[in-house]
Length: 615
Image 1 (cartoon, rainbow, N blue to C red):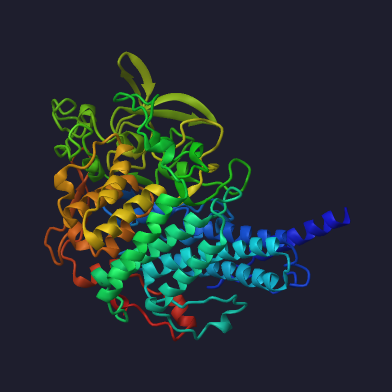
Image 2 (cartoon, rainbow, N blue to C red):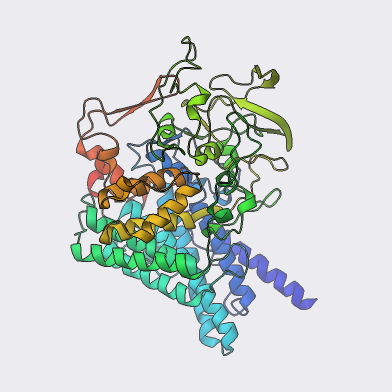
């Protein structure tokens, strides 16, 4: 009993350490913590510390879907600060993302910068504490377990640093625990050419020390280390290949391009071939109900529900609890509308995404949808009309699994119970409607101005409120690994048979036929096919903005500099919803490719230089 009470006291002390003040850059633990002589004694102590770091760092990634608002296919109209403990719920890191647009966002990420360093300091705390334990440990089994914990902490640190350098370029590299800002208030930014090798070294250590398969839920294994190391190499290759002129300390190297792409290929191939990983439900498309019905949804839909938690497709994820856990995710609150536990539709698909879903018959793009008001005679039956439900027939199953268009149904939820089917009809909110002789109340959602809402990430069963989800947020999925492998191998040697097979596996889950010959005729054609799959497969998962920046593709996707028209976006009724990049100078584009170093951090540290477009 005395030992039990002692352990409880230690655990409470660690929780105190891991939930301490977040008021400065380093999110530092309190100096009033338990001394090393009272902690860092057993493997359980190390596990407690690591779990605390995981619990902190996951909130730097669980709302990455907001970041898709910097691309062209997802509309963001707000952010969530879900509770009085916003620091624990994860809202603070994403604060300032209200109406996150494809332009002018480079100054909105100050909070993310600060909280990333908080996560890094938590990881450093674990690494240093467990390293001392390893030095004193003589039992080889216990020592190996402790080294695995260090490996996991180094993996987490690398994950946060990849986000930092992807957004800000050169940043201070800190690989030791910091107790006070005075210790780093004069530290300069570290060039990314020096940071990338550090990340690769950390991930190599993680790969060597982690088990082949995680021993418990929420923990990481060798495939996660390899996949992240491959992603670091892929990004490094991209920056060297396409350049990063806004980061004026960076000098691209053609030698580094080939080296990094080849290293990425090796890592991704290792993940694919050597760990027995498979796509969810073996990548089969599953059943897809007829238009308007949703009793039989494709497997891709269930991939983003708690049914898929723990599936081998999730290479790197962060676990979340459910009702009453205090550690729930809020995907439904952000993706669904009022008819589903009074959710708020903070994010929704733009009209333009619909034309990216290809035909399951031809395997290629369908005729473009025509946005038109339903008040126009015949609009609901006109061929290719965006408000004609038949226009969406025979498309990639992932559309049915991801998006609701007019007269598609979903399960309504209220007070933790199912309320029956609710049909979605744009701008007909909560109204009585009759469909095929059956009376319904239409989906009440006042949060979309595009014509669509999400089905992806929205539960279709009762039992949990809008902010009580337990879906494990995916950071790297196996499908993403397939597509990154295809991209890297294509950059090295053009279309390869194995890479084409990987892309076709991803397409198969949408019930699409394999790529036609013209899609793999050369490296450029195959790259376009890979980009297409990344758009559809990873929609709403926070990847598009990073892809556009590392490929230097913003001008290609949007408009050239000082274009008098820019790009106009519409809803399904033909109303213009937005206009971006109209008459924009080069500085506007530069501020999309790199973000500003937060002024508050520069005020505290005079050695932090500012990125070029924000000077």
